[in-house]
Image (cartoon, rainbow, N blue to C red; front, side, top):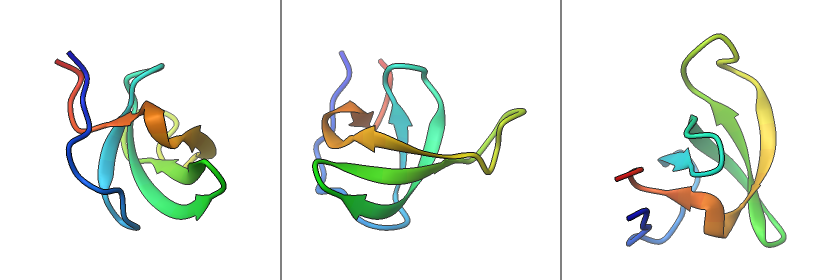
Length: 59
C-alpha cells in the first residue's frame, strides 16, 4: 500500500508512485510540486507531480 503520512515540504525526498522514481520536492505549484529526480540515469531532471502521487514508500 502506498501512503503519505506527513505534510509535504520543500527538500523532502518522496517517491512518485506512477514511475517509482525517488524525487526531491523543490517548489509547491497549484495542486502539485515541481520535483527533481535524485537517482538513476535521469537524475536532476525536473518535472511536475500532483501532490497525491508523492508517497513515502512504494510498499
